[in-house]
Image (cartoon, rainbow, N blue to C red):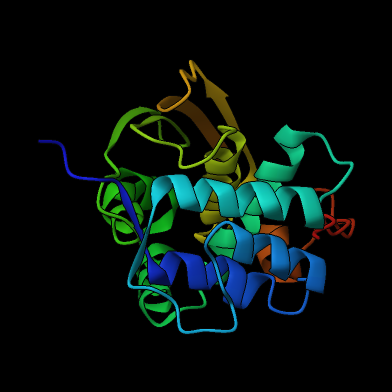
Length: 207
């Protein structure tokens, strides 16, 4: 019998305890409570994948109300990855990812993603030194852009520049993501967040 798909507490804690710690209105917290996430109590060891998807739906509706679903879930994925790399386990992974760089980090992505649940499987095909196709058996959300936002942010944090992650072939569960990036130019490395022509890069808005 196929085991039930479970999302571990550290995954839930990263998004709802860290990323959105000060962003959850009383109405949002009450809505989360109705679908099984009581943030006033200690988290369960794990939650079902269906519960996790409910949690994401509540977050998308309350935090990104009025934003198209694809964009809302992309932002959820980005914010999750920022928060995940802030956990004890995530900090260790981030240190390794920065040393390895985007390419090697993506080739080993399955290990990091699987740490947060009991079901993720990843297959990666390298297309060039700065481009891969990554198949994931379950995007963990109603929209594949959740996985796209998550992985694109991971590539950025690992040192990628101008990252693009495009989901294709989403069947409601699995998806192939085409991920490409540029190497950070020397001037950007020297100036922190400069563009290739030396102009300051405008920060991307984040919720």
